[in-house]
Length: 89
Image (tube, rainbow, N blue to C red):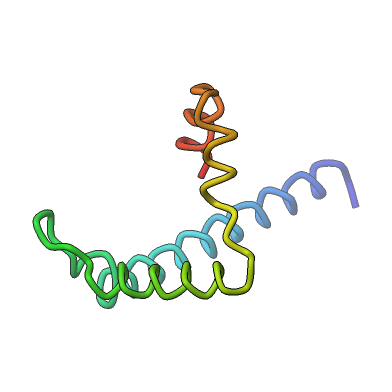
């Protein structure tokens, strides 16, 4: 196979990957909007999510696994770390 043939083959794979990612993101967005975040408007409180979060926190505390407050205390003085993770995560 020539160098041009190899380049053309890689270009084709790239477009296939881009199409696959786009299709799956579209499906994800549709499902999320039907069953998730789109159901919560600006003034509504997502009560079910909050209750579930509190149940998980109680379980983590009971198992001695709840360390989020400690980690937040370590990180809060470093504003650049917070900004980085706000963008990245």
